[in-house]
Image 1 (cartoon, rainbow, N blue to C red):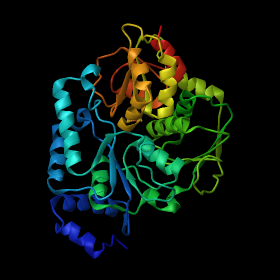
Image 2 (cartoon, rainbow, N blue to C red):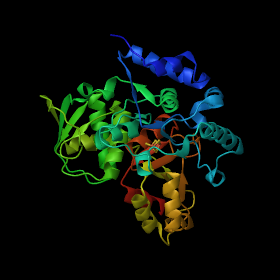
Image 3 (cartoon, rainbow, N blue to C red):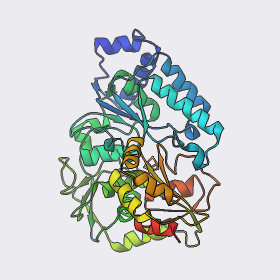
Image 4 (cartoon, rainbow, N blue to C red):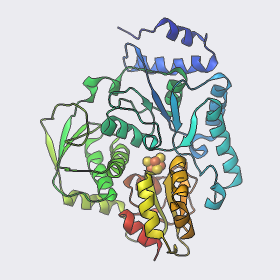
Length: 395
Ligand code: F3S
């Protein structure tokens, strides 16, 4: 059949709507042709990854600046975490050079009309699609959450293709935009209890390691909080590249039940914890809020830290979105956290900030944060509950 474009889409591709839109259309139509799309479809929400100057570098920044010459976001668009808290970077040990470059990146997005709050949980701060809505998101944990928990439809976009969708309001109809590609392929029966975010992260690692990119159908999880599902999404997307799963009784998609079902036991989770834990890890960095923390998470942590003091030599980051931090300031949580010597860091996270060489050992409740701490920043790691992480900060 081939990819058919409307008259307006053809004009966009021919450059009649400007240079940036032409480039954006080239990206979208090229992807559409590669993946056999027959048409483009409108999207209502975009989330762009690749925002940290640490990952983007000068070449990436140049590309953005060019797109910003005449490109404008057509739909609600937010950003993934940047390499630093855009306001309080200095006290987190970020260099002035890095801060200047990171600001240039965010400014380029701002010129395009992108909402420059930088978070991997955009659905917590107003970029919230509904069931069945077509969107173009890039951050793997958010893609998995939107496809699986919300039931919106998105492929895992790259930074440039997400920006292209923002500037055109379109994406090519292939992959997870088609119901037929959203059917579960392998069943997983969970034969153990899951209690905290770290357990859900470990489950994500166990299933992710086994399933690769195959869509899981998960049974045996009687209930899960939004925070636990966030942790699971981040982990299963990291260890398995999963962009969509079905969890019986919890997620909303219609699917058929696969014929083959694998069992996941407590032993499997213990094994995953062992694989992540470095026994000799000397913990000098504690980071929670991967994916970015909700106001409820922050309220609980503020309570745990109230009147206490973080031990000298330890650094604590609680990472979140800027609007959530603003709410935490209003509610007095920020003061409790910062008076205790911990940092409420917005717009950034421990994986995309330039932290290599700064710490020896990270304790976190997030299996995804473990992956990047070990692989990218060369820290030793331990995965524990949020309570245990905060306790560790105080001893
Ligand atoms: Fe979000 Fe950073 Fe974790 S982008 S999912 S907090 S690694």
